[in-house]
Length: 112
Ligand code: AMP
Ligand code: ZN
View 1: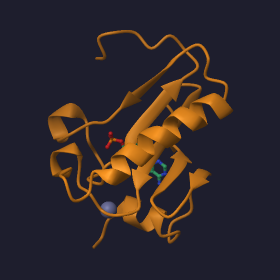
View 2: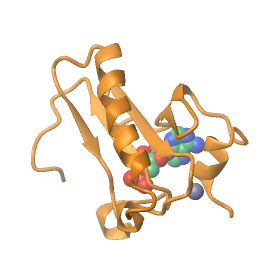
View 3: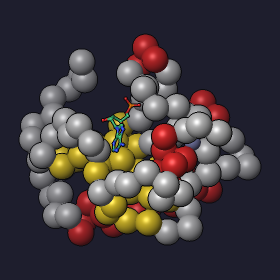
C-alpha cells in the first residue's frame, strides 16, 4: 500500500524519531504547529479512529501509555494536547492513524 506513514513506520522514509517499539513509532512533525509537536502512529495500518475496533485497539492503549511517558521525559509539565483528525473536514491529510502531541505554547480552546 502506498501510505506515507506505513513507510515511515517501516523506516523506508526517514523521520526524526523520538521513540519506537514493535507497536508504534513516534517522530517529530515535519511542519510543527507548536514548540513541541510530535506524532505517534501504530506500525500497523489503521486509517483513522473510525477504523479502530476490538481487534486492533490494543495498540491505541499502548500509544496512550507511551504518550504519558514521553510527555514526562520531555518535561511537558505545563500541559500538552493530544489530537487526532478524522476525515478531510477535520483536517486529516495522511490517512494512517496518528496522534499529534502539541506543547510549549498556550494552545487555546476551542481549536480552530
Ligand atoms: P493530519 O493533517 O492530522 O493528517 O496530520 C498529518 C501531519 O503529518 C501534519 O501535521 C504534517 O505536517 C505531518 N507530516 C506529513 N509528512 C510528514 C513527514 N514526512 N514527516 C513528519 N511529519 C509529516
Ligand atoms: Zn499506513
